[in-house]
Length: 122
Length: 122
Image (cartoon, rainbow over the protein chains, first blue to last red):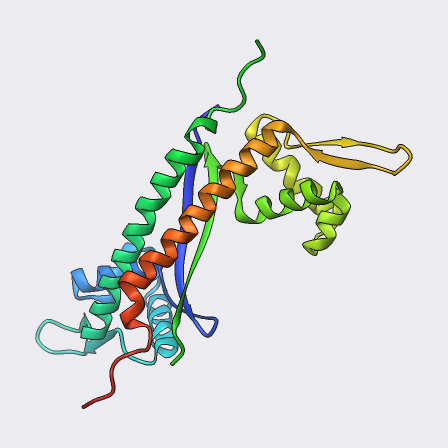
């Protein structure tokens, strides 16, 4: 019997609609790092259209933009996080990190002794 | 803009296979309270067969039984949690409660100031 592994999926809703998730945090962080929605989408195995749709859905639910695109120019298009997007991402990342630490601690404390199945019969 | 609400889904895996989840905890707690798999399944809107399948899947992945059924008798069938099942459920419930408390605290600390969207322009 292998040990147990705790898993957690986190997200935020507003009026029942998704406004941030672990997955979308990663997508937006990649945009911030690369300056490119195409590169971020490719890194996550998403089509450009699908990645764009995920971000536009969040923006519609949030009521403000997360990214700002500059089309064309010498180096081609560029996508950057808005200040509001940066603030939300930073706060959500701190939230996520704290919950993940709590998951590990609570798991170790409460389930660590039960991870190897029942004791063999004496 | 309504405030944000944090959401979390938790589960345990062993070798990539599900061994407990919030949903299955609830199903098993209802069995423990009612002594009846049929009643627990009905309370969760599941067919008896589907509820039974969920429990048998967990038992196969865990390597030990979670419930014990006594068929027939004066009062009809009865399903009870095994001691190992009771111990796992109690430990998982403590784990879940601690993580939920941490989710609320981390959300209040990190995202409480961002729940109402951007400030209106001055």
